[in-house]
Amino acid sequence: MSLYDQYSEQEYYTKKKLLSLNPGVVGECMYQEIWAIRKLFLMPIEAFNKKQYIIMTKKINELMIHILETKLYKHTYESKVEYRQMEYHHKQDALLRLASELNIYIPYELVQFLYRTNALLLKLYILRVFSHENKLLYFYLKQNDRLEWYEMIIGLNTVEETSVELDLTSSFLSFLVSFYLKICEMMVLSNGDDIQLTYNEIQFRYPQLNENQIHFYLTHNHSQQYYTIQNFKQYTNISYESARKQLDMLMQLKFYNRIKIGKKYVYTTDGCK
Image (cartoon, rainbow, N blue to C red; front, top):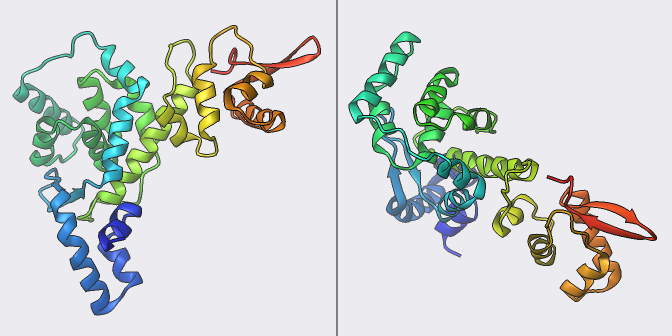
């Protein structure tokens, strides 16, 4: 495994963290070798007139794709029949006026960044981490018809203060993981919106589940239908006792309810979501 893969892909190490574990010349040489590859995936964040950046690692790209492919994200995005269009300079002026009314200093670079960058998740991250009392985040979401995301985003776990950091990769990665887990949680708790988790979403949110359990749930989750341990056993080709334990795990995680009909226990998704 290369140094880049070990300290950037397997787990992301900032220069400070890497040098704290490998002080002196050895650490500096290691970082130079890692940086030679990192800079190929560097994305500048010109939002605060600083030389801040994010290294677009494989994990960051995969997480962004997973979030964009979640049914809740698509449902929210596609439910807007017509995206509210506003002239570019009008949007900028509206945000600057709000900042003035709230007595908040907002760098012009940040305004340009918000309305020139296409990556919505990146813009939400910048506003969540750096905006004053989340007022700018609230206004931006309202201006772009996504106000229903506000409570979810301000409730995300974010890393330590990053305003003085140049490398924002770890912070952005933490934001994406929290955002993705929150979307998965909201879909599990969703009522009547016909929004179902995908295989990747379940696997990410519930790593304790195996492939058999996930595939069984995705193909056996119809309303007013009842499933038995024997159904699970036949579907997965495992022993009866193993089938019982795995189905009970799904029940404990609220994918199914277990009820007794006659002398037999059955499992149903009714009342779970």
